Length: 170
Image (cartoon, rainbow, N blue to C red; front, side):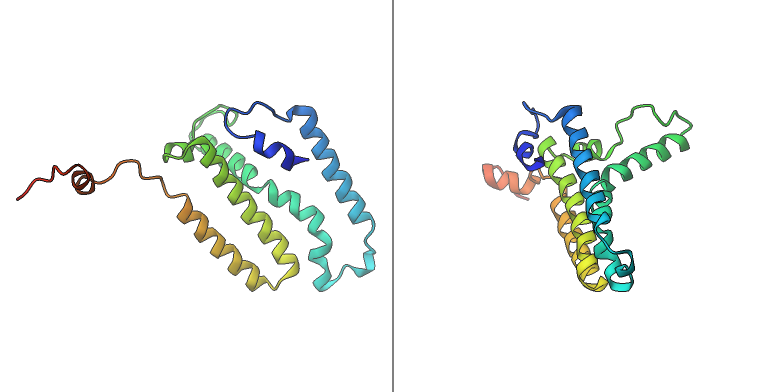
């Protein structure tokens, strides 16, 4: 259901899910988690089978990690500054990405990438040795950090002068 809305949920969205749709998704996630957890034999939850069993709970938490971290950082930042923790400001993750020079679509894609990285790592920890999962996390983190460098809009003076043929000699 979410993937159907994803192409329409870019900047200047014409269709959005709204409160009812998001509550329905929450209900479906909760019902699915309860159903999966309810089918697990409690005696089988031991040692290496623990993480795959908890995956229906870990995955929604992993998906919510980026917004929750943004919320916690905002409350801490405002409280330290002596302001109301519920007062608005322009220091959220998406505002910072926009200030770095990213477009709104690219800022959303960066936050999707962070969410995907955390979620895939949560799933990988359940099915692969922790070392491989952490290796995948750090490789993915490096790729994301390389990808989110601020876009270069202005070429340096030498390159610009070479393009226009107005290079000063001397």
